[in-house]
Image (cartoon, rainbow, N blue to C red; front, side, top):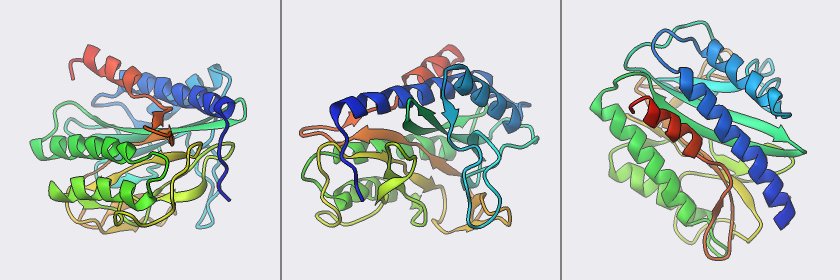
Length: 265
């Protein structure tokens, strides 16, 4: 069932999502060669809890295996999504997608940003740029009366025209009192197809895009998803509310990008 949100509920969702943006900024401050993803996870969990919220990823159930052990998904290089924080230090030239979720005052926030660790190669830098651009192209389609196929097609077309792969097996989702609600929000599709969008729908749009081919596989841990050709993948995500004339972006990259500017990126 799809739950349309009231204006008051959308404002509560905004607060949860702004906290995610601020948490990602705290993580961004310490991303550098030599830091482990477990260190990033500790910073995120402490910041979320200090701000009166719960990290929704921690303990998230998995029918394939054990609950998720971290407060963030920390996906390095060829890991597409759901990377488990560990003790392996980041290296110069790595990329890391940090996906983060919160519950604040009964509503969920969810957003992701892919970071460079030091200097990365030009092809990877372009992958990050195009993936982020595709997110906003999808958001442009998230208006009342459009269809999910319009949104997915906008993401898919932009990425494939730039030579990148679009992961099919993992998609965006509705969001509200639960982190994952209906509908599913694919990053591919045909214009005019799929569920019609309605004002008050709140969805997380999250392109997961590969430098090489789009095929993926899951590790035995039941969480870590990698590209089959072991080439890099990028992941950017915003939570938005469908509007009459334009989408209302409830999450924010502004806090992250202010940190990155100060670090000289």
